[in-house]
Amino acid sequence: MTRRRWIAERWDEVTASLSGLQAEHLIRVLRVQAGAEADVVAGGRVFHSMVAGFSEGGASGSAEVRFNLLAEIESEGAMAVTLVMSIFKFDHMEWAIEKATELGVAAIVPVIARRTDTHLAHAAIKRVERWRRIAHEASQQSRRSDVPVIAHPLKLAEHVKTASKLQRVVLAEQERGTTLRGWLEEVVENAGEEMPVLEIAIGPEGGWAPEEAALFEANGWRAVSLGPRILRAETAAIAALAVIGQRLNS
Image 1 (cartoon, helix red, strand yellow):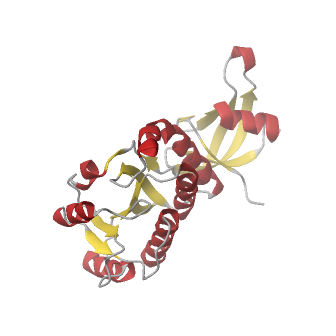
Image 2: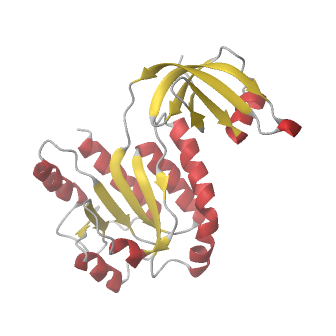
């Protein structure tokens, strides 16, 4: 039977613990008992672990579940990809964050583009913690050994102009000459035996404004296409990550 996986908030060389909502779920819903086995992620490493004890909290404080770390387990790290995602409708964006996490993205950078809805742009800063919880839960569900970094929202130009050694690419509806797959083949070939580290930008509903396309080009981002169809932002994000993951893992 596959053991459940949990991501610890605190740990040392031989123990780890969960608190708050994770611990409450373990204690009150799953009825955890001392001696129960689980996989616990601690500091980006995965351990076969055993529940050493727990406290329900209540008036005395937060619930807590304590584990003894028994043996380290081999685990696969995150895909070396940062997803730059223009802020769009929150329910669709949350779905994209969940699925991008399951696909193994290393980081997600929410950005405010010209065509980002003004209300969403103003409200985004208050959604960051929720997005991080979604990524945390999706990491556990998909048995990752880490949680993707969710950055604070910022204006597109601030991020595009930032110096970077990553291979940077932007999905562009008007691009017809270069596909994402073709660009990947070029990058992988040039990288030789090294694993390329990538960054891919996904536009908002309505696509990039002309001046944004020019901004990407001026700062060295390569424009690529997923094909002739017009995709929703969340569909484009997941399709692109699936293409990248398949190529990098082949």
